[in-house]
Image 1 (cartoon, one colour):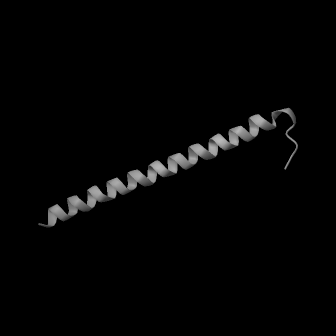
Image 2: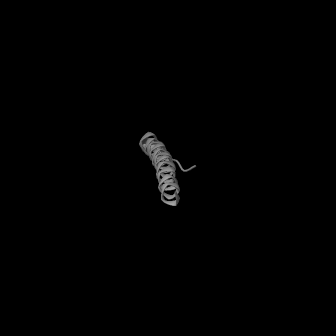
Length: 49
């Protein structure tokens, strides 16, 4: 790992925040995908009746 000197905390904290935000976005996207998939399956099922 390169020597970050006095900026080590700021750089590492920025990486940590970025990773947390990316994980949150992925989680929200997956949750929304499940909701949309369920709605579409219900609409398709209702249309076949």
